[in-house]
Image (cartoon, rainbow, N blue to C red; front, top):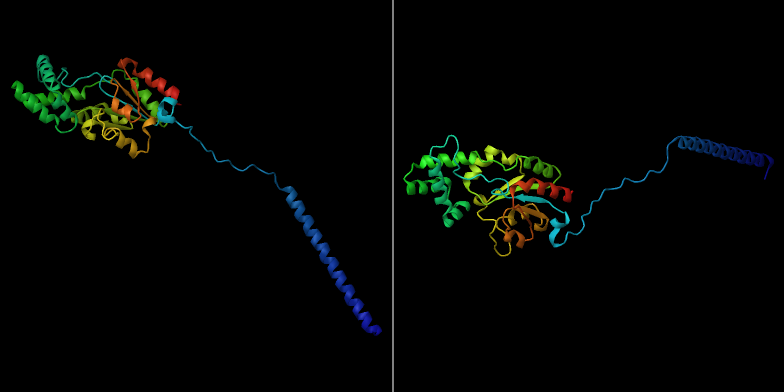
Length: 274
């Protein structure tokens, strides 16, 4: 190889080496700058956000007795109230003795009362029968029935706050009563019951009584529970009567022997549930 060619090759090799050296230096500078930037950042490892998973323990066949309650059913007559149809008071058209006889006549007929409670009859039908029997004006009998329904009272007004407390904590409170169209038409709106309870179940609307049982199901309670995906074992019924049909499907029935004890019973239920 000639001297000039060798010199040219050496010069080329020198330039290449110099270029590689400069490139390496540039890479080192870039790496150093990146290291400084990273050092200035807060790269502390943070724990991943944990998803809160709430699991319910197995409730067994009687979940409500273990404190797992999704709904509290509350009876009306002799539980929340002792007010009566055709109770006499200011504004009544008929005298007290006559109204007492009307009430005795109507509620002394089992089939009549059952038909009325199941919605097969309405107030006008019943008042017409009573009016014919006693020779009274049907309008007077009906007007006094309506008045008595609108004037019904709770045994203890404090129960309203207790029921609302339970409802606010995520437990449904439902009025469950064997009752007539007159109760739905006049008592519920006048007492604003629908503002206290999450729902109202009446036998005349359901077409079944609380005591009815068919093929192992309650035509009164079971459809309501099934529609909301609530197991009967997570339901409580507070009633003045031990409703065997409710117990048969797994509802925890708690007996009220004295309406004056209802608020304390509900408060205790709330305390044990939450």
